[in-house]
Image (cartoon, rainbow, N blue to C red; front, side, top):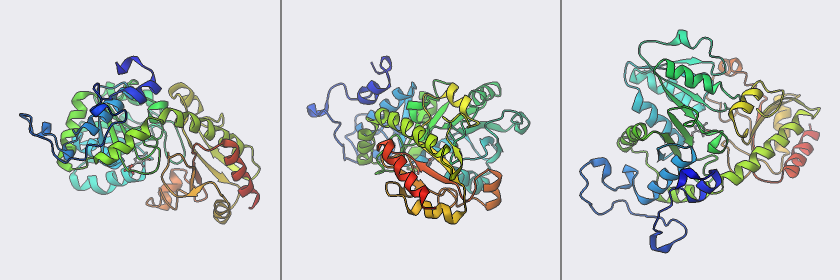
Length: 385
Ligand SMILES: *Cc1c(COP(=O)(O)O)cnc(C)c1O
């Protein structure tokens, strides 16, 4: 039934048990580590929380697969568990892959600090410009890895070119779709092999759990599930329950966050104390045309530079009343951070500058409050500098 419906209907109904457990309208939490033996012949089919196959896992798997129009999905203990288990499923010692040059900090560190010890090599490419990808190919190249919208400069990569390049060169294509969420971009429908999420962010949306997801064909997701079963990064049923509850309002939340972030971006762009605003919905963004072509919405993130020093940026942030000063993103409440202090503090200063990330850069994760109130709060804090 689920694939006939549109996204908001799928958010509520897809994957729900056909016969409700005990008649319960809301999916109960099955807080049981193990389940009675049912004659299974394969280790991975024994019902056990670590094997990612309890009733709470299964409902989420079917819902997530339906949301992105895929055959299968897998929830994981964190976004990094989804990313590490997926990459380690398809890359082994001696393999090589290509990845966009500016990635989520944890992923960047995994590739640069852990993979060399495993004999897995990576070359970085500019995901906005297909020129130059081909010359990085080797006979050992197995896959290409990108993100839908980059952090913190909010570039939309040339996603169609990534899919074409992967197909032409027989590479698996993996994409971290956290920033877009299935509301704004559905990678599998657009030709990617695997879509990965930090469900900590928009999918759950309430800043109260850490979780991840892997979405794709049954064949690929099963391979990742078996790897995850061995690595051990499974999601606890209680966190499954919270993610399941949070995800039902993803459509409503994202609609508001798409709207609010664009209103905030326009306000900032017209403010005399603001030097530069990054938001793919703005006509001034290099990603504006690609965002229009590829995405159904531009998500809730905005980053900008004030016309001033680092001290001015800190002063501005200290005067905000509604925005909470912290890293992470995608929840119902608005957050503010300087990426150099938090999400990108692990990068060397030269690397950051090469990537265009100024020390003064401020990043906002826009929540579901009223846009007028968020704008008024930003306005009063800008007056203080
Ligand atoms: C937060 C984040 C991750 C890591 O997710 P965790 O749930 O913290 O492990 C990966 N990719 C992106 C784009 C993120 O924002």
